[in-house]
Amino acid sequence: MCGIVGLFLKDKGLEPQLGALLTDMLVTMTDRGPDSAGIAIYRGAQAGEWLYCVQSAAPVRDFATLGADLSKEIGAKVQIEIKDTHAVLVLPSEKAKEARAALERINADLRIMSSGESIEIFKEVGLPADVAERFNVASMSGSHGIGHTRMATESAITTLGAHPFSTGADQCLVHNGSLSNHNSLRRRLIREGLSFETQNDTEVAAAYLSWKMAQGSDLGAALKASLDDLDGFYTFVVGTKDGFGVIRDPIACKPAVMAETDQYVAFGSEYRAMVNLPGIETARVWEPEPSTAYFWKH
Amino acid sequence: MQSLDLQAESLRDLNARLHAQSEKTNERDWEILNPKGSHALAVGLDAPIDVIVRGSTGYYTAGMNKQATVVVAGNAGPGVAENMMSGTVMIEGDASQYAGATGRGGTLVIKGNAASRCGISMKGIDIIVHGNIGHMSAFMGQSGNLVVCGDAGDSLGDSLYEARLFVRGSVKSLGADCVEKEMRREHIELLRDLLVRGECDADPSEFKRYGSARKLYNFNVDNASAY
Image (tube, each protein chain N blue to C red):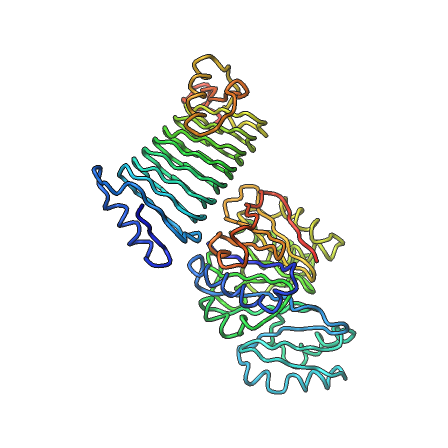
């Protein structure tokens, strides 16, 4: 098992509540996977700004001068927002590439969780309620977000094994299921020049999508190609800068429920996750079909 | 009517109240409020009582039901009426995957659509779906009847034994050893009764019947080299 929740807001009036609504949805899914949890929030792009969300095992030490050090390296203003073991670095977008190399020089142990104009990924080991509390997810606003609570089946319970996984700038992936050909696919992707941090199957799916998109596929085409190249069980939810999508394998035994109103599109591994959303009583509720890619965009 | 509110009492207490009803109970009418997608609601009932659930439910609603009539005024999650023995379960909305799985008796009515694996391994249950059903439905169905007023997904009736399948709309594909069969008068009569029980006014003559070609489920020595 694992639990997935997602919320894509159509009504801007709900944006200040995004973090609170997603937290409630994620905590409801705790008994589908209590070992680690994560959330990707799209807080809305500000013109000219780039965000790096980095994680450290020793945040007090590593984050103390990180903002100033990075600012000096790239010769531009850097804002740092520290949230527990994660820090969000906000910098001018034209410095994004330079900043990635500079972060590597400053501290090679920092893990880049996400990179983009809008996305922030926070994930840690622990119960969803505790993880959400540590990052104060409930206070976050944004246009859409995805949450995941993990029951590890095929690789270790670690921060990096938690979901969401970044698949590229402003993109992320969460997964419920298990892939059976991830080892052979990982070897193939390593030969293609990709690198991996864990033995996790979902990291392979994320890398696969990144690789497909680097070759020129759009996200929809990359997801459709995954139906042929990934073997196993999966319900995937993906986030992009302005949208989110859902795809299930042809067997579709991993659960998925969706709800749509004039205010939002919501995803839950179970209907339970959505019962406190405004207007759920009159929402259109349905199960996404197998082998079918669904997308919503702003 | 007895009212049970899941906001006010635990699922376990609620199910225990329903289990405490005997054959001769005079508390015949029950309603469950605020189900909010809860799992295992009204499972294991064994008394001639009527239960209405006012809202949508999670996994395994009304599983193992005997005698009782359970109505869900909403959608039902995976495994509704799993292994039902007798009685009636009626879903006003849609049902998720493996509705009525392994059911041995009773009637399951789904007024919306059912997802994949509806009636998987059915063993005597009657299932009437007003809408469509998903892929791999009635897989290894052994006995009972599955009626679908809409369309059926891929691999209907794969590895079927003796369950009877009636579909009014299209069938995306038939599973291994499942074939279309002649609709004889006795099947029209059977279907007419099933549709009445399923509160469905469809015309039995519009349905096609599917069943087992009986080539797969007996060991055939000529095929020994294929195993």
